Image (cartoon, rainbow, N blue to C red; front, side, top):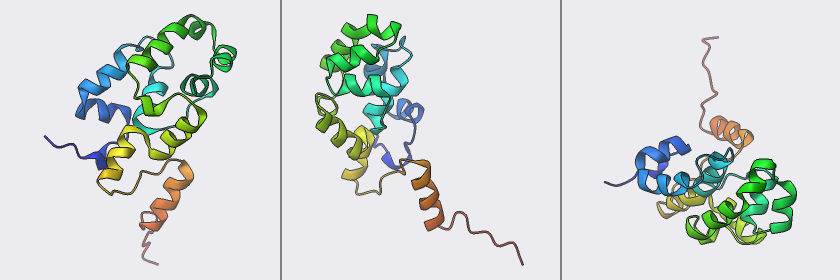
Length: 142
């Protein structure tokens, strides 16, 4: 079965079309309140908060400094998840994180292979895209 990457816009949709990769990414960290954000970053390149950014940048001092009480106890698990599960291209330095975000993550990279326009990444880009496609054009009959 071929995956239609153009229709995947959420983590939940990705989980339906590639349950094996979703499970691999999610199952090791599912009990952490930052799990959704980490998976969303890997799949879509969506920037996350200061703590996860420091984790993905491999910035130990700032990750500890920005961690809440739960994540202070999870630091070893985060390191193991990065090393064993997360794509090596998405973590390790600020430059790698910026490049991953720019690529749109796993889904964005697959879309690029299909030469499909990337999804809007912010509410402003979504508004611009909707305006450009005429989505907001209304014929009120007047």
